[in-house]
Image (cartoon, rainbow, N blue to C red; front, side, top):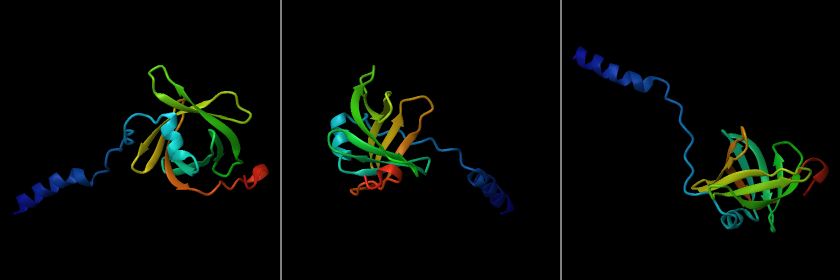
Length: 145
């Protein structure tokens, strides 16, 4: 009986060890097109997080207009457009006031909302963690935008 107990304990030891790191879930399906993105996002304010930490909010307005704010930072007005990459994937690119270079992302829609992969160097992968139909509350110069 002692041998059986010892054998069971030895087989159970790997289960007690720290689990291996879990890779992020692969995006579901192809990236969203501009029409799909617009259909999902317009009229909503979405909150995004990176690795479980809230990163910022964006309000999606008609005519490809947006309001973005990093958590605790002033709001920035901007617009978005669809640009096709060399492989044909539909990138959604944002240009905010005072900037000339677009920030481009691939957006995917999954069971829990949008996920977004930044197409710049060292950029984040973000996941939608909340949504509302209410406008953003902008601290600073654009209060109430």
